[in-house]
Image (cartoon, rainbow, N blue to C red):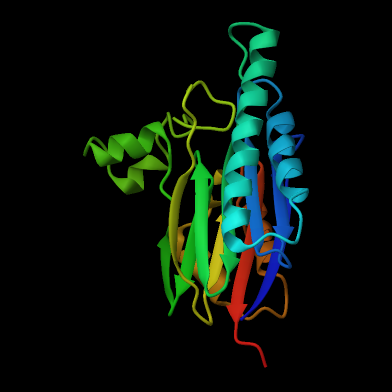
Length: 241
């Protein structure tokens, strides 16, 4: 299968600078979105370090080697960020969410930490394949609030896991599955999925690709006055020929 991708990022309708970073490497089968943790020190430094670590992975790796290299590099970045924060002082945190997609040899794998998301549109049905590491997701799991209430909850910005976060035993969650012709993936920072509904996302992902679907998603979020940085990567799998 051939993999095509489109990516876009913007500081949003309110923020004056952008703490999101993205990685768009279709030749390697690697994509990522990193969102510097809001309210902490130097979120753009954290997301930039993640992006740099993934941008410099060599092209020659097998799928298994690529997966291991991603885990190693993000783990090293986590340690470096926590060391930098410790040097700044006891209250300092330099952190970022991350969501990564690998597509190789008829399969995909998604790894993440935090609340940047991955979606899969298959046969017209949109599914969120990542699961937020966030306080509101824990509240949804406990039955305290509904999923519809989560995005607009006063503590919707509180994440429970991040690269450079407080956890001493950092771990990336992972899901994987077969890659089918026609699959479309969306990786995004929370600015997008908290501004556009799942129906909106599905509609943009279902559109033809004459124009960039990532640009269209960002434009729609800006039209709705997104109050956060906003980033989108769309990946399309199609049969060669």
